[in-house]
Image (cartoon, rainbow, N blue to C red; front, side, top):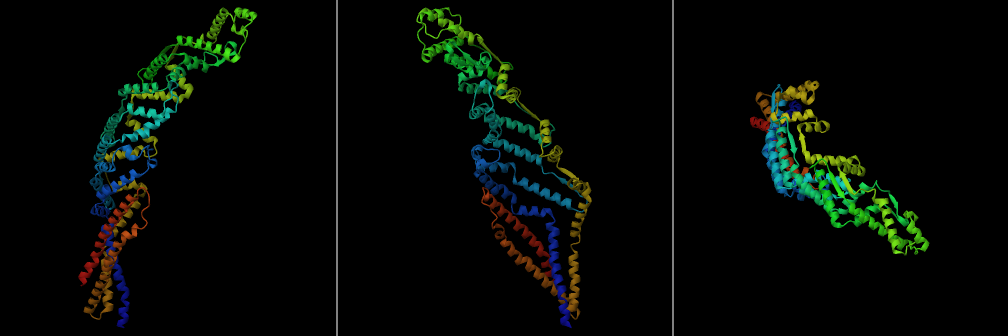
Length: 607
């Protein structure tokens, strides 16, 4: 009978073991796992923030510098270290100054404490202020420092300015000139030097920062280019002078002016045919190089003043009367050469010479070469008059070019895009660039990244933090309709904390039938109950002690296997895995201590 009774107590002993196990787990859940600040405490114990912003950040920057620049965002044209001209350690140190580990730790702790208040059963007041305004000011200060000690402005050059210049080089330019994209980019570095960019960026940051952190509700960033006009003019003149001066003068100014004034194809005496492009080429060949340079320089000065916005009107006058006469003589020489070398005409007979002397037009010239010198001179004079009549009478002695003609040429060459580009350049140089809070808000409204309402709330949070209670936060996070369900979940969590002690009462009541079934008298029954408590407590201590510790010791092996990919950031991944393992071991160690408290107390009391 006694054997049967003791056999019957085994399920109760197993229940005691289970209850001791569950009571320990409940302690951990109630006082650690369900307390958000527990996780923050573990982060602080392992020095997580110092490690993250120390060795890990250093390794991230080193790995980033190794990535081929073609694979980086922002379309870099050179390796990152060459672009920034800043060693990786200096960049990492700058980031640490901008985002101190202490601020990260403080902000995380505040977030976790706020979450803990949110999980309480009562409608607790909740306050959260991460001092974001101070941190943003610190980031801006460090950004200015980086700009001053590095070539970070190259990112702005490569990302924004250079692509725009490449696009401009592909469009028709005034005076039909051609400037390569590389030359435009080279010139831009002279017109917009790094120190000027530095000043403008710092000024913009100083203007925008108070608005972003909510100190003011308006801002105006104005970039004035008037101090760059002289430099832009000189550099533009230099680029134009480097081009073929003849092409600028004749292809850009003279040819467009006379193109509609003379026929596309002209038949001269004796059948020589030239088109309008041939005429322009002859005029260019007949002009003295010094005269071409002088007229080109005048044209460049006038056009440059208009492009950079120094003037709204352009008035260019070029006297080509002497050039017309020289070209006329050159064409006459070409006709004579054509007659001798190409037509191979015979000498004129007496009758042909007589007809030649009486001819009223070159159309009546007989196909022969006069032998009489006087008749030859008469023929040349009539030929000169014919050439003048066919070509040069319709060409004015003075080429007049104003801004309307220039814009018309651009419209013919590139359409409305070319004239709009010219207007944008002139407006930017003369009026500068202005960007206000209104422009920013309009850009945000047209963007899908963030709503304007969210942006306003973010500014308010940066300035004042957030203050409210659980109900207010519930409605913001989950919606008004779900606040009741969230409140029920919160109550269930807190009830679990509140009634965790019930497990210990159940242990006591479970020991009673064990004592009754195991002993025959009061002393034996006490010994059976206490003995069961001691043995079960010892078993749980062994489970949460040596066995649990063995699992923690094997944790690095369990997590490291196959965790690292062979990519550019494999070294960073290794450090992050190592830091994660350290943190996880700290969490498990802290959990182990609370798991052992209950069983050890029971074991000590029972012993």
